Figure 1 (cartoon, helix red, strand yellow):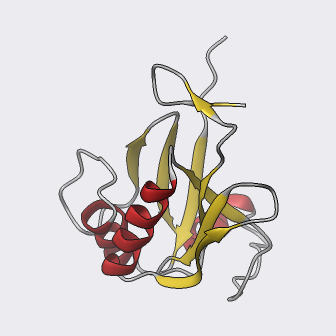
Figure 2 (cartoon, rainbow, N blue to C red):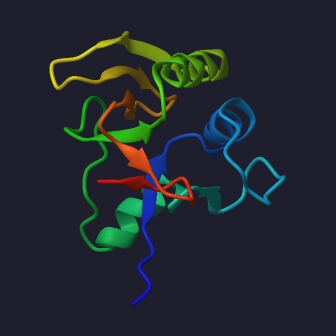
Length: 143
């Protein structure tokens, strides 16, 4: 059975988010316009989607959509890499693209190396390297 993973982020400013992910972090997409109704990025192992936050709330429940709040939502997104140098590379890309660095890359309690950035919509991303992880021939993380 095929399984497709899609990470959907509700975003406040579609054009700003597209510039951050497509132009800043280099996520691959065929979309060239700055304000499409929806955009999918091709990433290894998953599809990453940006969708207007108000429309996402309406999609969840049109009659009583969830309230849109700001601040930490209790989740993070993970960007898993193959070495410590790549952690710094991705963190630098994110910062140049407009991210706020929440935690500089460093050794962490679980034996790996990671840092956190906050994207323009307030989502927290951990960029992580774990020396015990491996990746398959398709660059998929093997757990």
